[in-house]
Image (cartoon, rainbow over all chains, first blue to last red; front, side):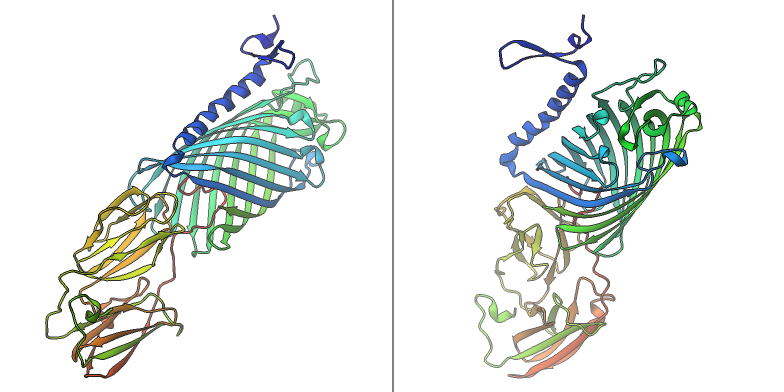
Length: 318
Length: 212
């Protein structure tokens, strides 16, 4: 019996016949459908005075190791024009609780490696509870997000889901501290093995991330941030044919994004990310932002990588 | 705002003015400074029915930012935004809470103790305002030019002082004793040392979701 029958969804096509949607696609649809529940709830409470959300961010992102390569020959840098747009609404559920739901669009266009060009369309739902009265009251937040990702090189196409929970609090006039845990699951469309010993599902991934962030209000116009994140889980890196790296990998597939005879491999890794940011307010609703991240990945079999990420963006929030 | 503005009181035929000017340590005019003149040696006459006052919520801000009122005044908090606010204060002069509402609450908040009341919104943390509850009706707030005139003051001696949300030092340390003659004007000026403005930021920051 075809695998797609188990756990799949039966749909009618235009001719009225039955079409089976595969298990992975069905899971994606169910997950997005689940995220639509808070959308409906938000619509129901709209009469209570929901606030509209419209956030737009446009910027440049440069990575000096966008391929996450370990060896010198595999390390590639690139710069992307990145845009994101979120639109939705938030509503108050009682005096302490906020529910927000947004539709999210993200687009990235790369300068050198067009195979990385991508579009993402998804939904995010978040629930925030403030544990008290006043600006210094702590808060907790839980969120779920799902998105469909389409790449110019379709080996990376798939669905991405994220569940997160966080806590935070203001300390005095200047400091805002927060901690967050996030689980991410990525489900790729394709599984193209290139060796009988290893599957090809490089972009089927799971990860757990624990992050900490502090924001310091230098002045009403300037905010500084520092953060640390610890990520455990799957990482997709790139290499030319390399038996030692393949031996440490859990999946390998051909990936022409970075050139011919290039492969993407999945490896279990611990990644440390140190980040810094500066945000300059431009009026009440917009800001200019600079960010820097230093990533240190330590994978199985001693497969390591370093990546420096530089960001500059303009952010508008309605 | 002087005693003469209240219903039931008539302005004395002979009265004087206080012209106050407030500047900061960079010699720039200071807006939103509250100046008040308290008569020395005699009790302050408070109207039996103070007038209605209001602090609006417009475009997710309190308007005005500083509101001087007379002690005992009822204050309404109309919400002119199309979303709800939750107004509160922890100040010793008046602790209160107006849970989520739109429009104008039916009952005002009566400020029955003199002092400074700082108000906020529990949803939009950057919203902040100050209500200065004065023990005398002889008070006013400086404009953008840093000036205010207290007019129609009956002749006599007054302790005149100034307050600002960002001032360093105490309000009492600014007190000056002045004599008001009939039909005269007294000029008085202060140079205040002001702290840096540090209101919570409203502009967006990547990775921060604010109240959402």
